[in-house]
Image (cartoon, rainbow, N blue to C red):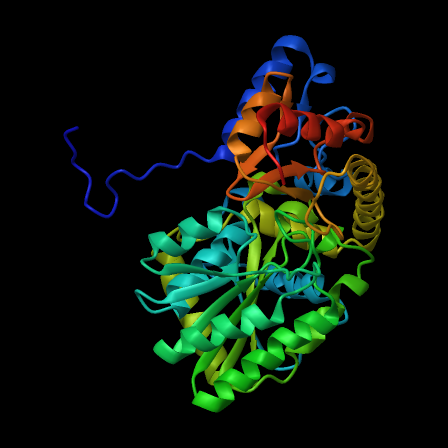
Length: 416
């Protein structure tokens, strides 16, 4: 094949298996009806009829925007009011103390890209969990860094502090700094949520490792699904472990409005950094504005101003929080059906605590999903398992899904 692309771009494709499977599910549902299709692929909140959920208050905020609020260019780092409210919504009553820097980013994806580009040297290893959103690989590799994973959960099904420490130590033996992305609350794709004690253990390990060798660590918490992990303030208690960190550990948070406010397509979020050193935050803001200008330039004014409208209207915000809690309950009910039936039929799954997804650990996941599609069931094949989107499958359709997975695996001669 004749190629015009540069060597680093040649042969690359964005064949996202999630969007591809979702596209096939939607096309089939349009032909034969939504009621005859199980679409467990999409990472968006769907109601029991399979329709996209957009909170009432969000719709109201969108309709209230003036032409200037939805059409004007935004400042590169975002509107001041937006940044203020993003910090408040992200941390609640549990914001770590220190100097704070905030930059608007296009959804959580922007914060993931930016932490890799601005804080990992070219050729460095970036540490992530073995169970992770597959887009992480692209953010890291496109920036010219290397993906390194640690075993997220141990044999007891809890945070694997030992493997985390081993990897941190080995990386810091060869690098001056380490970037860690930790989607530890309502993890995508497993639904596992680290306890406050587990987060504390991770931070203690970092403190020990950087203290012993005088190196630096940057840890970014990906909290995309945090608002579906339980009660609002309780889900944020883990932030206290990042309070008063030494100056050579930088805490960064990837906060997105996509799930929390059902604003998926608005591409709005904030990258928030907290440090005890003012110079570190000044540097963060300068680096983020420069690299943002050189990529997407600035973010969507609509999404940012919608959050401002919502947070300045207490009644609107409370309505959104109330409606969100309805869906937190609904997610738990859907997950309960799947996990209880899975236990009954002997189907293993990664320990689920909360969030949008459950993962069944199994080899040959592509074969399993391809076979299920013949029965109008669409799930996501991953490297070491099959992901079920609790967020998009109704409680009614969840019944029997675990058994169907077991039967399909048996038909294909696949054991867990």
